[in-house]
Amino acid sequence: MVEQYIVGVAVVIASLLGFVFLYYNSLVRFWGLSKLKRRASMEFPKENRINKNGSGEDVGTTDIIIVGAGVAGAGLAYSLGKDGRQVHVIERDLNPPDRIAGESLMPGGYLKLIELGLEDCVDEIDAQRNQGYILYKDGKNAPISYPLEKFHSHIVGKNFHNNRFVQKLRKKAASLHNVSLEQGTVTSLLEENGIIKGVHYKDKSSQMLTTYASLTVVCDGCFSNLRRSLCNPKVDVPCYFVGFILTNCKLSDQNHGAIILADPSPIVFYPISSTEIRCMVDVPSQNLPSLSNGEMSHYLKTLVAPKVFPETYDSFISAIEKKDNIKIMPNRIMADAPHRTPGALLIGDSLNMRHAITGGGMTVALSDVVLLRDLLRPLHDLSDASVVCKYLQSFYTLRKPMSSTINILASVLHKVFSSSSDPTIEDIQHACIGYLRLGGVFSSGLSAMISGLCPRPLSLAFHLFALAIYGVGRLLLPFPSPKRLWNGAKLFWVSSNIIFPILHSEGVRQMFFPLTVPAYYRTPPRNKDLKV
Image (cartoon, rainbow, N blue to C red; front, side):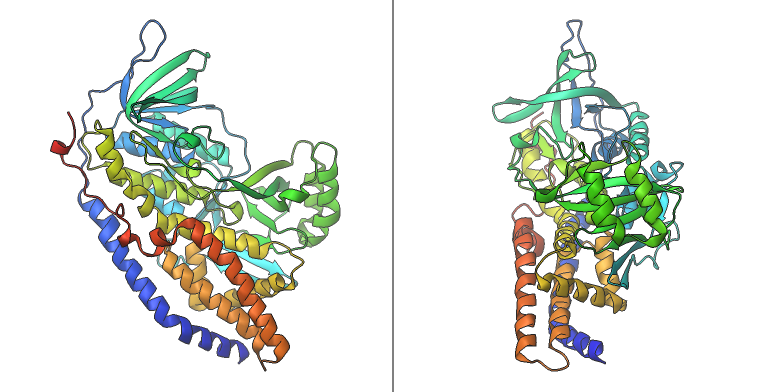
């Protein structure tokens, strides 16, 4: 009865706002992306080629240069190549990447993969079905199950080894005759009169080369050395993920990952193959133990291991003791702040990063790829960099529904799930568990946004507001004594201090009022607008 009363109060207060939010957001999406698809064209000139002269200097010209062949770069190369563009991809290292990130593809990201014609890249890599996560805290649990009832049975999230997936994407892109995939290190962008004309790079043999293109797309990942020329990067590293692989054990539900809200660190488990489970331990930056002198192993054994599931404890200890099994990854957070630069564009982690706790990075990257492909399709000619740049400014606003929804959730959940000496954070954690346990629209609404199936910032605002009301209501009932009123006020204050700075960093105007942004949607330039 108490929970029903709280929910009733929350719904009464939030329902009108939610209706307005959802209706407005539907109008935005209808008048935005749908126009792009109606104007799509598939005919492109094919006269440009990449050529190298005898002196070793690359003086060829292509349609598009892509810097980086990760998920975003390889996916974009394939999609643009399928559209008939001449594409030159330059990747620093074409060997299988060795990393502990990029192992979870949300259902929304898998739908983008299908839209790009790349769904077979998760075949034959022992990918595991991912239908959501289960939160565990103090003996209670709450499911975050993706709402997949309206989709075919094969539409789910996918967990896998990142290197297997990336190599499949690269192979798919390189299979196109008009896509050139080359190993090399881009040292700088080639700028003339404020316009990016191409790149300087070292090839595999360390020869210095130059290649030209009408458009250069930079997607060289979280460690990008080119982004400073194209944006104002403000990178925050609040914590690290310490990752290792467990064998000879299983989770209680193999189709769901697990997140343990423990002190001192949240612990994440998810299968990445039929025999392996990835464990990720969140460690604050200021408390990161050294890996080389054994401090990290001691930290994991003494402080973290007692908090894991009994059925995974032995495998957890064995994984820690296994040589070279522990890897450390910084959780980098960076809001997109691009400069208007004719001839160049940023996408993927080069442009925007979020905490990895929700595994939404690849979903955002593939959404960027689909959007950029659709924006470029109507352009028969990319030669006038200034006109094309003005048109492509809409990319940074049109990407907001997906990117900001996943970014905000990742940052909010990380702050809420992290251990704190503040008892109010503990109250917010219990409120989050209780809210998800209500089921129905409350659980499915949040999980739809986490999974990338409902990329709507306005819907997210509705749920965050309803969750805060629910949390305050839990503290006030059954009788709002002075102490309970004080605790409720503290919860609302702490929640606001978590949410509002994150909303501000993502851009309130672009998220909630995109129609007021001049670059929200631009009509594709006509041929006579472009210099021939």
